[in-house]
Structure formats: structure tokens, C-alpha cells
Amino acid sequence: MKTIAGGVTAAKGFQAAACEAGIKYKGRMDMAMICSTVPCALAGTFTANRFKAAPVIWDQDILHQSGQAQAVVVNAGVANAATGEPGLALCRQTAEAASAALGIPASLVMLGSTGVIGPALPLDRMTDGINRMAAQLSDTLEAGTLASRAIMTTDTVNKETAVAFELPAADGQGTVTVHLGGMSKGSGMIHPNMCTMLAYLTTDCAISQPLLQKALSSVVPDTFNMISVDGDTSTNDTLLVLANGLADNRCIQEEDESYALFREALFEVCRTLAVIMAGDGEGATHLIEMRVIHADTKENARQLARSVVSSSLVKAMIYGKDANCGRILCALGYAGPVFDPSRIELELVGPDGNLSFYREGRVQVFDEEKALALLSERAVRFLCDLKMGEEEATAWGCDLTYDYVKINGDYRS
Image (cartoon, rainbow, N blue to C red):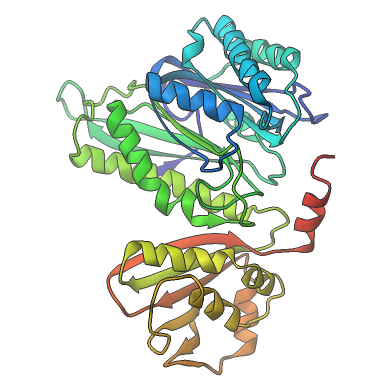
């Protein structure tokens, strides 16, 4: 498997487009479209928030009813959440507009929205944007990049990645190259279950819909559900994977070596997008990585790692570049899992060797200048060894800055 250029158009048969529809923003693109030349197997996961946005409900219905899709229409600026029956009606009308523009059934059109909760989406602008994008669809890498930029809200960078790998050919003669790419947006209101985000992945792999869903559900717990920016979970979280089978590989119908390789590629794409989102948290100046090793259970490792990156005091500590390891010890201590504080070790990870913060039940005397240098890096990494078992997990977050408050203090404007 290798990382390649591109995002949602890296896989065969996928096209993308973007436009400025004036949904909320002025002078920037705010709508994106992804379309496959043929119908696709569909998998998805969605927000655990009880207030589910209208497009989440729409997408969940399609996933449960048919498990197929061919196009995705996404807008930024207005979330179409807490909009009641009119919001659901607008989803249907938007899908019908895409159906007419693309010549496909409305039941194959997935929808995504991100932005302010409450306002109604302007159907006329949505329809106009759909018609313009349908005429501009392209399979170029640039088209995929433009789509990734169009779904940004408070994001400071667009988020896309892609990989390629080899699978047995459908005719049994050698192998074929399979591609899997994706784009996402997310900067604030991010916390597990499912982390606040929109993410769309495309692949030309031939795989059964049940196994596509199983693979996706298996990688989310250690990728998108291991990041936190501010402890808030959105109403609109949506992660979709579309697989059109155009790579002409032998269709994955069982959990064999091909399935394992596909799942590995899916994990890599999801983790890459998740880490980019964590590092691009609203107002963030640092990515925080917390790795917990030698835990007794996987879930305990996850819980401990997430507790550290979710702590407001740890986030503030990283922003201030203050080597106050007590903040991390506290976050581990109240996380829930039982461990022996006298046995664990906590280190600040560096390229030329780690800096010991805590071991043998005591905070260590450490080189403050070296600690400051490591805390000044764009990515700040910690390692906690529980000395209990063989399980491990990694979580990602970001620091808490003054700009976070500024951004969210006037979000609607």
C-alpha cells in the first residue's frame, strides 16, 4: 500500500465539482458534489447526538433501505439541523434536483450539511448550485481538491488523502491496482461518538456491501472516535464510503487476505483524515497525541488516551508550553479504568529520545529547556506505559487557545 496524490477523485469512475452557491458565505465555494459513473455499495456511520440533522436522517434511511448510492451533495454554512419536517422536505427536494441534473434516482443521492444549526437552507440556491456542479463534474485531482475546500467551515486547511494497493484481478490473471481516497471537514464541535465532522470516502474496490460496512465500523473506533477538540458532538456527523467496483478486482465476499488489506487501507485513510482534523481544531496551534500502551483491555486504553486529549487543563498546558505533567496524571486518574499509579510511566516523546515525566510513583526531575523545546513542536506527543497487558490505543486532540473562544463567540456571524 502506498499513499498517492488526490482525494475523492483518486478512484476510477468518481468525479467531483464545487461552486459558490451563496448558502451563507460570500466570496467562497460552499457546495460540493461527488458522483460515480455507476451505482456503488454504500457504508456509513453517523452522529450519536439525539438531535440528528435532516441530512443524517435522509442518509441513514437510504443506507438501511438499499445500501446503495451514486452521488453526494454537500453544503457548508447552514446545517439543516433542528429544522423539523421542513428540513426533511428540503432534503427530498434537494435529492430530486440532483436526480434531475445527474439522471439518476433520487434514492441514490446522499446529502450532507454543515454550519449553523436552526436556519433553513435556501432551496433555490441549492438547486442552482447542483445544476452548475453537475455540468462541471470532472475526474481530475484538482476537482477533488476543490470539493474538499468547498465543505470547509472554520477549517483552516482542506483535508484529503488517498492510497493505492494491489488485489487479485477478477479474471484471476495477476493483480489490479485499487484506489481509496477521501475528504473531510472538521475543526470545532469535535468529540467521539462520532466526532463532529463530515467525511466522504470513495473506492473503486469491488466489495460486498455487508463487508464494506463491517470494515468501516471496525476502523472508526480507533480513528475518528479517537479525536477530540472541545468535548462537543455535532448534530451532523456523517462518514460515508462509496465503492463502485471499477478496479475490476475479484469481489471481496469474505474476510480473507483481500478484506484484510482493504481494511488496512481504509484504516490508513480514516486515521490520516482524523489526525488532520484534530490538528486543525478551531484556534489550535498544536496537535496533541496521547498513546497508551500495555493496557489490560483495548477499551481501557482508548478511554485513558481520550481522557488526556479531552482535558481542558491539558489543552491549556500545551498552549502555554508548560511542562506541568500533573495535568496529564489527573486526566488519567479520573478517566475511569483501574490501574496502579505506582507502576505507570509517563514520557514526553522526542525525536532524539523521550523525556521522563513520571515513573516509580513520582514526578521526575527533568530538563526544562528540553521539555520546552518539545512542547514548542507543532505536534506534541506523550506516551503512557501502564505495565498491565498488551493492548494499546492512541488519541489525538489540540490545544485550547484564546482564538477558540473568539471563533465560537460569534460563530453565527
